[in-house]
Length: 539
Image 1 (cartoon, rainbow, N blue to C red):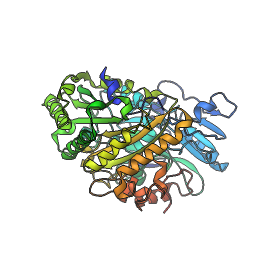
Image 2: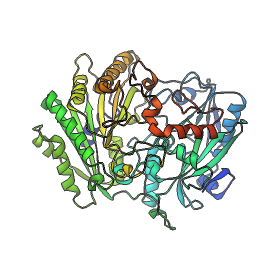
Image 3: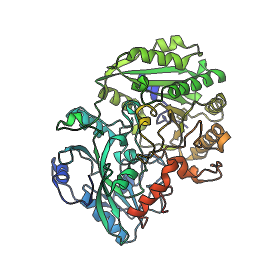
Image 4: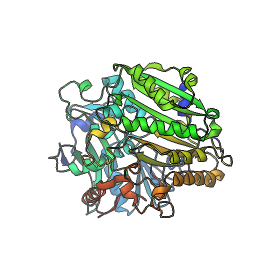
């Protein structure tokens, strides 16, 4: 059971206005400024590329479609969708390929539409916003936006994640406490939908409440991928900005950040000290979750990998240009490690001051599993309003120190990517309903050998069920927990054998926003052309 965890070894490596059908326009022509748009490519099972194009990040899920259509323009997506609908074929869509559940690649899918050829990032003068095509990946988005205009979106760490799934699920990262979720800067989307008559067309929907397609924009801003259509283009502009200077229309990241990676040996942690670390960590984020908190300039990750990994790690990023940044980081680390007796360990690992984009690339490069194409995995998530209890932390400790299961890539990762500016937005303004959480947690394990499937999946199920035993095995929205993150889809969430809470999956993902999502589904996908095992259903 070896192989690095996607997030479990994080710290250690780091140490070294709307319209109907969209016509041709300058905005759409702008994508071809680097050359003519290539024609669509159809890959059949006999093609050597087929094997590569029918499996995503999680090697557990492999598709067997009739063909894969690799597209490079919105018009090609419309044609691909229309062809599949006319033939009665089941469609799935891939952007970056990081869907951790079998929603894209499974036996029911006949046609996979691959957006990897639709990946331009440019400034659209017509809409006065930054256009990011649906197949772009985060590494390219960050590079282009920052190098050309000095701006960014507050997205995630993994460079190969596609913007399509990331943004439609909300999108978080190290800058989110300071600047909000990715969708908080989403100005408009272009979506290929299918009407009741079976006609495919591209629709443009914006955040302008007067836009007749505003509800579609709302649903794409946190409603999850694969639900309403194919998002071929996103436009980003921070609310309240205006003017002709693109560099003032989106988030300007810090010039420099302080990046701290502290490893704490497992040998220094017994059950009580481990629980202290977990509760200290949660308490800090609980106390600094307000949108106006000066500490919103700091975000951190606690990577609690299995004891066989040797260490647990605290990875932290602070805006180095903010007043008192160094003092805030020091106070933070002291608060998290209070009572552990590891002051000397922390002091021996001072932070680095790095340019922001260099820090982004260092974090990405320090996690080999981000680009490891051989891994199988299973994951579950939880939003927290309040810190974990000592009992819940003890359940984590018991799982992470098991001697009959010794995978160093099995981990509990607490991520301080909630709170702060994210919580300044009302939960009904976008489909992302989790607007008063303090942090969220990823429970995950990864491995390579298919023979290890049962052991890893069983370990994760036991861990998660134990941590959430008081609420039927899942983090039911309430005083402490706030449900699950749709971008970490969990196949077990619909199974009453595991989700014994009595709370349906859609409440855990969407809370009170689900009925509106269903109405949007009825309006824009009445034939349920776009569906998967946990897609929004018709009302």
